[in-house]
Length: 459
Image 1 (cartoon, one colour):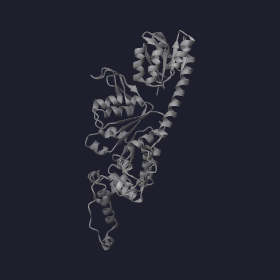
Image 2: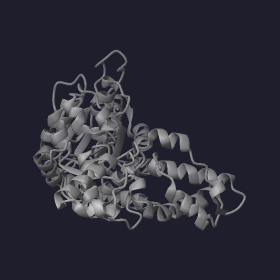
Image 3: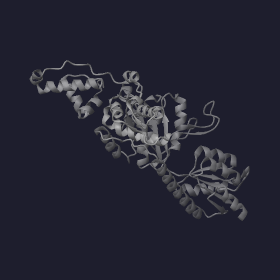
Image 4: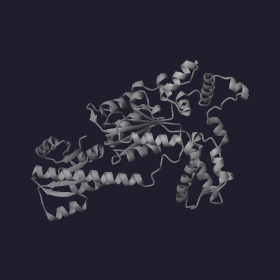
């Protein structure tokens, strides 16, 4: 994708010459002829570099530079002027300009300087993003269970792909943490990561957040707004709860994924953007497609690389490891060193069904850490919401009368297989994908067995 530079000069001929030269070198050029236009374009378009004439019709570079640095100090500014003086050059550099160049400037010389600044800026941003991502980074793969090890293996295989990833799992299973890990450890880790929760957003608000709008696009659009897609250029967009995205917005997102183009509200021309999409949902999107609450074409596009995050109750052996990692962080945050679990508290954590998953575990431990008089947390310190757990947990398996050993021996292999599949389906509320995972076979194989055995399923 093209790098974008903002050329600010009140002489049309100068702007034309610079634009023609730099577009021939693969850059996108945006022009402004005054301080007022420069302010608006700098905020709205957020260029990669600015070429700024010192003296304009309504002000000077000394007025603009502090404002630009306040918006984004990482964007380099080159100041050009026909009125050269050492005093002016010192003032401009003190205000944050990278260089001060006299006019007329040779365009090949200017190109070498611009290219060098753009490369240095990209390297600096990558280093900053990498350093920030490694500070207190959460590990989405804590534990040694088979489910979490399989998730990590699959996640590592899709790291460097640009294809969309769909993160599926119950609320609180850590989809946001995994999305952050996929971004920071992937090929786009040096670029921006922007996040948006689609739940409950009205169509117009969701659309303007994603795509931005032009001034006057609707009644309250008093200024131009840059959308999150532009902010995430060369990086990653994480759309949480994408199953709640309004049907009117879905085809526009599909266009971004297929063509890498979009339009701001109120704009007539398409814009190009280079982003990777990470989407997350706790809903069954296949069911949403069947009930026409989600577009099938968008579903097939975003589910190219699906990752399922297991519920906490599906990997109870991981709970002590996760809990102690959370307590280590709480020790630092709350100033209570040495927080730990007694064996009985550990057993209590493993026995609880955790309908709220990791988020609920964190809340229980934080409350215990704040209220407990000792650093070694006991079962009495762990206040579980059993009523909520009963309301939110999957329906229990209906009890079956145990067959006698002799009766079991009389069953054929097909009958044993049928009964076992029935029990697993009941435990998973008829959900084929989860049942297949529990049985250790591909979903397609389970569908074939259901058909041959004459069994039905929910999904």
